Image (cartoon, rainbow, N blue to C red; front, top):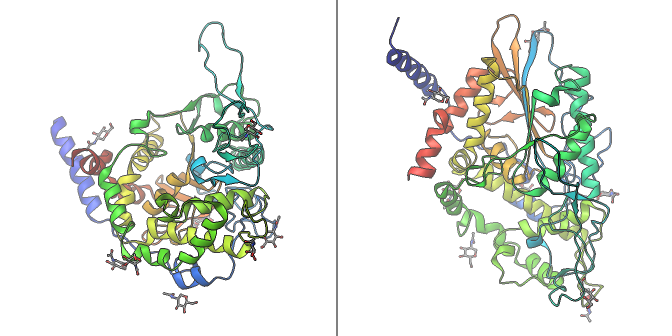
Length: 469
Ligand SMILES: *[C@@H]1O[C@H](CO)[C@@H](O)[C@H](O)[C@H]1NC(C)=O
Ligand SMILES: *[C@@H]1O[C@H](CO)[C@@H](O)[C@H](O)[C@H]1NC(C)=O
Ligand SMILES: *[C@@H]1O[C@H](CO)[C@@H](O)[C@H](O)[C@H]1NC(C)=O
Ligand SMILES: *[C@@H]1O[C@H](CO)[C@@H](O)[C@H](O)[C@H]1NC(C)=O
Ligand SMILES: *[C@@H]1O[C@H](CO)[C@@H](O)[C@H](O)[C@H]1NC(C)=O
Ligand SMILES: *[C@@H]1O[C@H](CO)[C@@H](O)[C@H](O)[C@H]1NC(C)=O
Ligand SMILES: *[C@@H]1O[C@H](CO)[C@@H](O)[C@H](O)[C@H]1NC(C)=O
Ligand SMILES: *[C@@H]1O[C@H](CO)[C@@H](O)[C@H](O)[C@H]1NC(C)=O
């Protein structure tokens, strides 16, 4: 019998030679209107939905920023009998919400009402008699508080907060998932939630707000369900672990890089108009180093059927539909640039988001080794999670992942060969990667080889770059 050391060497050698054969290069996304600055600046329109959670039956699957497509029975590509589903891991952005506080205007001419929702946050003893009464947050401003006039007049939300409409979308999302993985495939059962399923959230409360409605949609009989959360310092889902190596790479291709500033220089008139109406300080770099803040301020309104803003001092000076659509095109352009088009984006995302993939690979390995009872993991996350994830997979066409944007990783066993294969669904359809091609029943070893090539075995590359240097 060989010694332990020999076995380890053999193992390491296998991994190294497998990794050497893998193509880890950055491959640019396909040319599209999203990343063509001429088309972004000149329009017209946006080839997508920004004003409603509803996508027509006929169009389901197209980009809808307010409620992105997800796995549903009608569109799901059912695998044939050769394949047996063994493990599923879902990750999606939370559902629609108010804007972030930092993305609201100094003074707003509309109110956001959250009095139609209850956000629960309380602690209880886990064993023995429960000692806490379920209690929830109510946001309000006290007229006696002299600082009460900033932000939204008469609003009662904690920005950001998932709206009642966003909760409805999450409920439907959960129901749709269970119809496929439960009703149709019988992979999940009503009681799977007890010991075969893990729900995970970030430390940002909006992911927990969404998880409750997702779980109700999937497992309506469940009483209390744990939401797993990692300590912020090491959290791989949001992500929150610090990596100045990654941040510096992104700064170098964003910031003052001419490839980045080209679209900002071309839109000074648009910025000036938006600033004049919103009251945002034209010197505020958070608002002017990218379109992110205006995008969130305007898309949140549109997704909730609220009017576009008019000037507080001149109600006939308004942001027009055409202005908003230009902002939306610019937002998608920026996400495509940051996470896919910039050649160094792959080096950024492999270190920024690699730890999520390290964990994913460990889950796939455990499913293959049958060493874990968990067969379904569900992660509720952010656009800041889905974007680097799509960059890591080198999605063929990048967009700004809208509300509810979902990626599903599926592990199947081929019953004829006993081999394992991986499929990745993005918005419910097979994800097309510029590097890996369609990730549709590719050998699990190839998928793992690609991931580990980028992260190092057990994330060693990320540790080296983010911690050691
Ligand atoms: C960008 O779009 C313009 C206008 O449609 C077109 O003329 C140009 O060829 C496109 N550029 C690329 C690189 O596709
Ligand atoms: C959303 O926008 C589209 C295209 O601009 C328009 O046809 C549709 O009526 C709008 N829907 C709502 C609910 O405002
Ligand atoms: C099952 O699907 C795979 C991949 O799509 C295909 O190669 C195979 O021929 C199919 N098998 C049967 C029995 O239809
Ligand atoms: C602040 O208080 C005043 C009364 O003192 C009230 O009129 C106003 O609506 C309050 N502002 C907000 C944002 O609630
Ligand atoms: C700008 O983009 C081009 C094409 O991707 C790239 O070759 C070039 O190095 C970039 N310039 C800078 C300063 O990053
Ligand atoms: C954009 O404007 C800034 C400031 O004037 C300038 O430094 C930069 O070179 C410009 N970028 C491009 C692509 O023209
Ligand atoms: C108000 O805005 C409209 C539209 O931009 C403009 O035509 C009008 O002159 C403005 N009124 C004042 C008093 O500034
Ligand atoms: C990676 O981690 C697994 C599980 O902790 C361990 O069994 C394995 O030896 C590690 N591999 C390397 C090369 O460190």
